[in-house]
Picture (cartoon, rainbow, N blue to C red):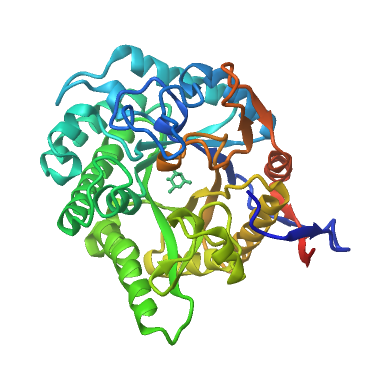
Length: 434
Ligand code: FCB
């Protein structure tokens, strides 16, 4: 769907380019439930708002060799993906399933052969069924189970992986599963459970980090961090006390509380990097979140003049702000572990990418240490409660065709050029009204 009436126009100094440092990682990201298919976790029985499910998804579990070829064609030098816990352990303390482990070893070997650096995510919105049956992350006993899993996994993969991303967006997971009811186990307004999930995950992160750093030392020198989703929450009208209060509560709960839990005081030492997932902003008007993802009608959003993709408001200047904040506060290297836009309007997505990469470049020029950027997502996939309606992919996937053919989208050509040149061009698209 098209939300912007914006067009791209090249500027005259089109050929000037802004380089990134040598060795900068240019990647794409996915998660197991969204792309692999054939998975047994809490999402298996889930039906999304479009009637879709994750049973086959992109069949990446079987088609990873082809997908790695696509990554090479795109010129990526990095890939962020998850290893699915539910495939590897069938009970607390169980040995890792050899076939599933062999699968991921092969994925890693094929990535290495293609010169692509892996970043492995350990938890991305899903748990093994036996963990869910015991209350998931509301139960502190899950921490020890996770530790056991991580110890075994790191021992098996330490020669192949050095970038470990423990938890993906604990804030989103705890919020949508325990406050908004959108993710399994579909709880609503359970603030106590929300807090417990975040706190248990934060403790598990500290423990996993110790294991990864100790075990991993015998292999490649490990780096470890979480991926924090950062959304800006603002009031549309500053004089509206209620909207300001709503924005403040959201900021406090999803940004400050979660960041403090994972990185506050001595816990900062548990991370060697910060992963930042950045999409944009949510503005409130009369308590309503003015974004498509919360169901606000597009015509209302448009009447405010907000630029949104199919999910949230775009706010590229926010990327610079949050990078600067994280850099000053924590003094840790940063990876942009996710950024992307969902839309059928490819020029719009190109504009969004350009603007966000310009913001990134400006931050790095002002000494913020960013080591890599992962586009969300490598391909169109199962977008949780929204099913297959949100098109985030660099590659398109035709879900009506049983063979699930992948195709290169126009944005992929643009991103591919950036990855190969390790630079963005000055051909800054300027915005023109229709
Ligand atoms: C992030 C999630 C990812 C995907 C993108 C659009 O919050 O980590 O799985 O849903 O948003």
